[in-house]
Length: 59
Image 1 (cartoon, rainbow, N blue to C red):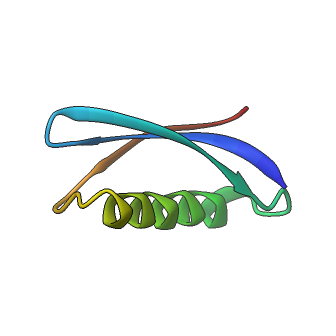
Image 2: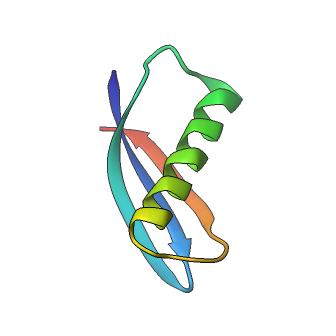
């Protein structure tokens, strides 16, 4: 597992969190995994609506 810092914007506020993601995932699958983690984060923090994924990087 590798840790990734994922950042996104929702309603003009930037959010960022760290999540462990399988190191074998690359390319589009990695982007899809990050988007899925953003959706989970938003549900856990009662954020509704659209978001813009602004960044992801290994930590």
